[in-house]
Length: 410
Image 1 (spheres, rainbow, N blue to C red):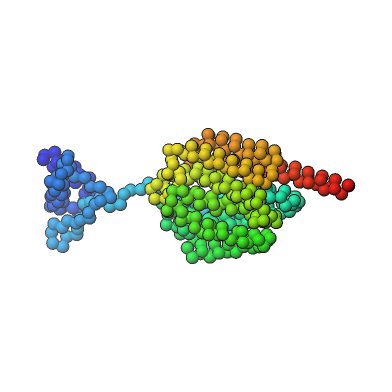
Image 2 (image 1 turned 60 degrees about the vertical axis):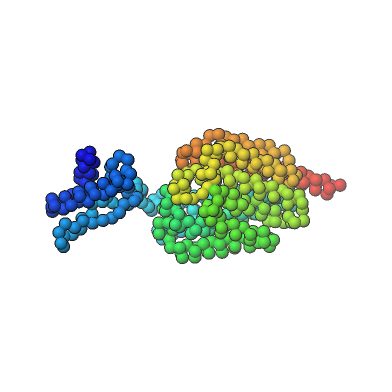
């Protein structure tokens, strides 16, 4: 008991606020209340006889020693301390610094200063265009103009997807370090304004879509359901990256109808498009799993699900399996489309090497390293696959031209 009383006295000195006008009678009353609470704690089985007050489970109470005297609050602050984090600072460099201040939140919402996601959305469109071009005997100008339209659409629709994502996640983003300063999360854009802006983005995307052949409208429409519902996946499954893959890979189908190839009339084209789509799904899950490792600690605290959380201990094994699936399905797409050696060596071989290097070298415990590979891996792997497809198209197109010339001469 003497040890208990001494401990209570020490705790009381730490707990009681420094107030010059606090009388000795009020201090004594406070000690009695704390002592009484400690004895009750001891009677209820506290093993070391000490009074423990958890900052997450305190009872607020007041003491009054004389009639009419103000209450004293002898307990500690009821809210746990949180580390201070930097507040939002308007951009002073880069593209956003050139915009009027009122435009900046909407530019941030569209992520125009972080276009990597748009490139990831564009590459499946480019690959399907280059793979379909020999099947439709499309001239280089048609391939180039179609690719430019896809790039424009990717930039717009990726921005719309980000806006939809931030609207759904406006109550989750404040709890994640990387996302807490996003415009809607920090209150720079109201949800109503965000919805209106998203509507404008979707209309702009529709304007681009209408520049393609009419059949593309019907092929593209189902993807809107995936765009709108993807943000919800992280609330119900540890595999939202697969839903993202289904969304971001849709362009792997679109290049065929964009160049006039009827998927329903050609088994070879349908098989090629299906394999290319599945290959892109694997690629999306792969790079987004690395991306998810940047938020893995905050996601765990906020209750946000991801494949990185589910398979943290075996991430590199999962990444390896995804890389093998991506390259295997890419090769199957080439076989179905009648691709030549340039594709299999350049695109498939290049993808296998670049993915292997990335998986081996990426440090999943480093946010900076994960971000570097997410950004640069887009161009490294996406670039070699594109170059292989472009080389294969150029070779096959020149061969077709030679055959046509021979027919004319004969």
